[in-house]
Image (cartoon, rainbow, N blue to C red):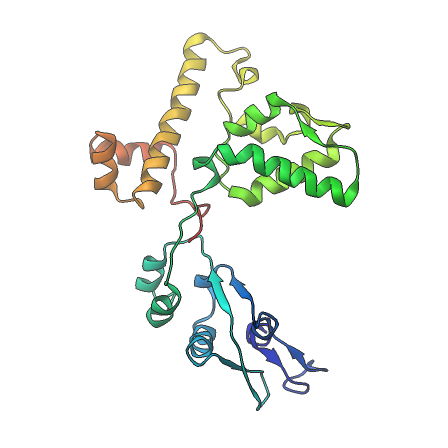
Length: 257
């Protein structure tokens, strides 16, 4: 299935192939082919992708005719490419072939300035499609979103905006339209201080700081404990204690390469 989607298929190549159709490579000829989560691609398909890149040609599944292609390939992954090679998830020869220019896009939590821009963009797209009259977002709602860590990255933001768009009363998305978990997990929101003493509220905020601070530096150092401890000026034992305290795990919501 993956192979036929990528390279195309000739009629009768397999059960269910009732007609010939071009694959993504042929359709991208003369332009750009984007491959998301390339480290998840089956190894056998990686071999054929490498051959296509080297020979600049493609043959459909079940076909004999070879078609020359001229295209630019962009690939993305949430993981670390070098680690994927070491673990055998990405072929080393394919890595060297596609790793011409590598750009790391930081996760959303590290580029807060983009939050407002992306929110307006998603709102605009939704309004163009559905025309419900919801065109703005309350500043208090944006503030709550700004303090949320967004483990699901831009995809999570898009889903939150879409959900809130349908629930909102035109023309504004307000705090009541946001998912409850955005507020519940945000100790900076005053509503979460209700019925809490000064000491308890302060502890809540400090714990949130500890968690975000350590998680941020762990991700920055690709979870190298020694480098993280040195950068944070605390000992390795403390890093391990905080990892266990907050049940931290290496994020799958990293920025993409």
